[in-house]
Length: 106
Image (cartoon, rainbow, N blue to C red; front, side, top):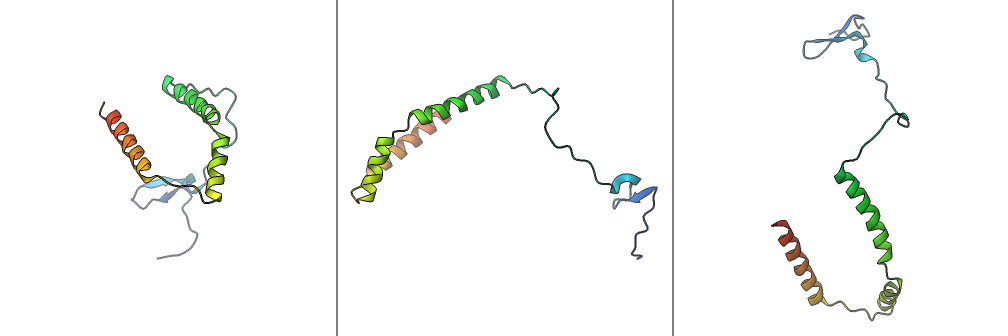
Protein backbone atom coordinates (compact mmCIF):
# COMPACT_ATOMS: atom_id res chain seq x y z
CA UNK A 1 0.00 0.00 0.00
CA UNK A 2 1.36 3.35 -1.02
CA UNK A 3 0.70 6.33 1.22
CA UNK A 4 0.80 9.76 -0.32
CA UNK A 5 -1.05 12.41 -2.19
CA UNK A 6 -1.05 10.81 -5.61
CA UNK A 7 -4.65 11.32 -6.70
CA UNK A 8 -5.42 10.82 -10.35
CA UNK A 9 -6.67 14.14 -11.68
CA UNK A 10 -9.13 12.48 -14.03
CA UNK A 11 -11.02 10.37 -11.51
CA UNK A 12 -11.00 9.23 -7.91
CA UNK A 13 -11.61 5.54 -7.28
CA UNK A 14 -14.73 5.12 -5.14
CA UNK A 15 -14.80 2.24 -2.61
CA UNK A 16 -17.57 0.47 -4.56
CA UNK A 17 -15.41 0.14 -7.63
CA UNK A 18 -17.14 2.97 -9.48
CA UNK A 19 -15.24 6.10 -10.38
CA UNK A 20 -16.20 9.48 -9.04
CA UNK A 21 -15.85 12.72 -10.98
CA UNK A 22 -12.52 14.51 -10.64
CA UNK A 23 -14.16 17.33 -8.69
CA UNK A 24 -15.73 14.95 -6.13
CA UNK A 25 -13.19 15.93 -3.49
CA UNK A 26 -14.00 19.63 -3.80
CA UNK A 27 -16.17 21.05 -1.03
CA UNK A 28 -19.72 21.83 -2.00
CA UNK A 29 -21.08 25.32 -1.67
CA UNK A 30 -23.76 25.80 0.94
CA UNK A 31 -26.48 28.32 0.37
CA UNK A 32 -27.17 30.51 3.34
CA UNK A 33 -28.69 33.88 4.04
CA UNK A 34 -32.18 35.24 3.46
CA UNK A 35 -34.33 33.76 0.74
CA UNK A 36 -34.57 35.57 -2.51
CA UNK A 37 -37.30 38.19 -2.74
CA UNK A 38 -39.03 36.20 -5.46
CA UNK A 39 -39.48 33.15 -3.20
CA UNK A 40 -43.12 32.57 -2.29
CA UNK A 41 -44.57 30.15 0.19
CA UNK A 42 -48.21 29.13 0.26
CA UNK A 43 -49.74 27.62 3.37
CA UNK A 44 -52.37 24.93 3.12
CA UNK A 45 -55.72 25.58 4.76
CA UNK A 46 -54.72 23.27 7.60
CA UNK A 47 -51.44 25.10 8.19
CA UNK A 48 -53.18 28.47 8.12
CA UNK A 49 -55.76 27.22 10.63
CA UNK A 50 -53.04 25.87 12.93
CA UNK A 51 -51.13 29.12 12.68
CA UNK A 52 -54.23 31.16 13.55
CA UNK A 53 -55.05 28.77 16.40
CA UNK A 54 -51.57 29.14 17.87
CA UNK A 55 -51.89 32.92 17.83
CA UNK A 56 -55.31 32.71 19.50
CA UNK A 57 -54.04 30.24 22.12
CA UNK A 58 -51.27 32.63 23.11
CA UNK A 59 -53.76 35.47 23.47
CA UNK A 60 -56.23 33.29 25.37
CA UNK A 61 -53.55 31.96 27.73
CA UNK A 62 -52.62 35.47 28.79
CA UNK A 63 -56.32 36.36 29.21
CA UNK A 64 -56.93 33.29 31.44
CA UNK A 65 -54.04 34.09 33.78
CA UNK A 66 -55.30 34.95 37.26
CA UNK A 67 -52.49 36.79 39.06
CA UNK A 68 -54.56 37.09 42.24
CA UNK A 69 -55.02 33.31 42.45
CA UNK A 70 -51.34 32.69 41.83
CA UNK A 71 -50.43 35.13 44.62
CA UNK A 72 -52.86 33.43 47.04
CA UNK A 73 -51.44 29.98 46.28
CA UNK A 74 -47.86 31.24 46.51
CA UNK A 75 -48.58 32.81 49.87
CA UNK A 76 -50.25 29.68 51.24
CA UNK A 77 -47.26 27.58 50.13
CA UNK A 78 -44.86 30.06 51.73
CA UNK A 79 -46.69 30.07 55.08
CA UNK A 80 -47.23 26.29 55.06
CA UNK A 81 -51.02 26.34 54.92
CA UNK A 82 -51.34 24.90 51.38
CA UNK A 83 -52.87 21.44 51.37
CA UNK A 84 -53.05 18.94 48.54
CA UNK A 85 -56.27 17.02 48.01
CA UNK A 86 -55.14 13.72 46.45
CA UNK A 87 -58.72 12.54 45.84
CA UNK A 88 -59.52 15.64 43.77
CA UNK A 89 -56.31 15.22 41.77
CA UNK A 90 -57.06 11.53 41.14
CA UNK A 91 -60.64 12.33 40.07
CA UNK A 92 -59.43 14.97 37.60
CA UNK A 93 -56.77 12.64 36.17
CA UNK A 94 -59.31 9.87 35.65
CA UNK A 95 -61.80 12.29 34.12
CA UNK A 96 -59.20 13.69 31.72
CA UNK A 97 -58.07 10.18 30.74
CA UNK A 98 -61.66 9.11 30.05
CA UNK A 99 -62.23 12.23 27.95
CA UNK A 100 -59.09 11.59 25.90
CA UNK A 101 -59.98 7.94 25.37
CA UNK A 102 -63.51 8.77 24.27
CA UNK A 103 -62.18 11.35 21.74
CA UNK A 104 -59.75 8.77 20.35
CA UNK A 105 -62.53 6.25 19.65
CA UNK A 106 -64.55 8.60 17.41
